[in-house]
Length: 315
Image 1 (cartoon, rainbow, N blue to C red):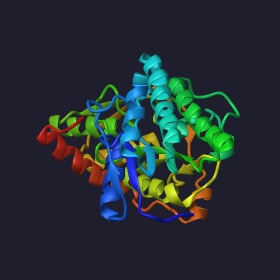
Image 2: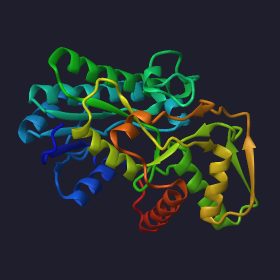
Image 3: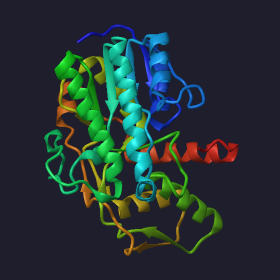
Image 4: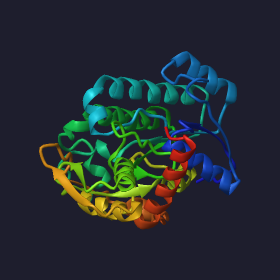
C-alpha cells in the first residue's frame, strides 16, 4: 500500500471522531487536512458538496460526519437518523468518485450488526439477523454506507474501505443528558450527583448489558492506519476486544467523579443489545491495536469534561 503524504478532507472535523482525527493528523505532521463547519457546508446539499470537493481536490476523504445519539434520540427521531445520514454519506462518496479521490474511509458503527450476533462479533456477521430496534434507523443508514463503499469498489475499482468502531468516548463527546451515549451520559450524571451530594442515582435499565469502549484517539490512529494501509472490501472492526457490564462501568465512573452514594437501576427501561463485543483479530493482524486503557481514558475524558463545562464549551 501507498504511504505518501495526503491532503485529507475530514468530514465532521468538529465532532468527537473528526476532532480526534485532526489532532492525530497535526501530531504526526505528515499529512495536511481541510474541513468545513456546518455553517460553511451543508453536507445534505448535494450541489454544495460537489462544489466543495471539486474546489479543494483532496487526496483522501474520511467520512466522520453523521447524525448520532443515544436510545432516546434514535427512538424519537428515526427519520432524521435515516434520511440525513444516507444523504451525507452518499453525497460525499459520489463527489469523491467524480473528482477521483483515491483514499477514502467511511466510518460506520458496530450497531450495524445483528442484535443477537455471536460474540465477539466478526465482520462476516453483517446482515445475518435482525437489528437492535432502539437504533435501527441509524444502523440501516450505516449499512447503506458500507454497501455503497463496496459497490464503488466492485463497479469502479475504488480502493475505499469502511471501519466499524465500537462504542466511542473521549474529548469532544456529546454530554447532553437527553441525546448522549451511555458513557458521557453517566459521566455527567455522576458529576452532578457528586457536586450536589445526592444520596442515590437512578440509571436506565438493569445494568447487565455488556459493552466495549474505545477511546476516540485510538480510533483516529486506526483510521489513518487504514486510510493507506488496508485495501479490502470487508468493513473492518476497530475496538479493544474487551467488554464490561454497564453496572461495572457505572462503578468506575462513580470512582472517577468522586461519587460515593447508592446506584439504583430502573429495569422498566430498555437495555438494548445484551452484549456487543467486536472481534478485532483482523485489524490486530494488520498491525494495529488499541493503547488507551478504560481507566486512563475515563480520567482524561472527565478532566476534559470538567474543563469544558467550566469554560462553557460543551456541545
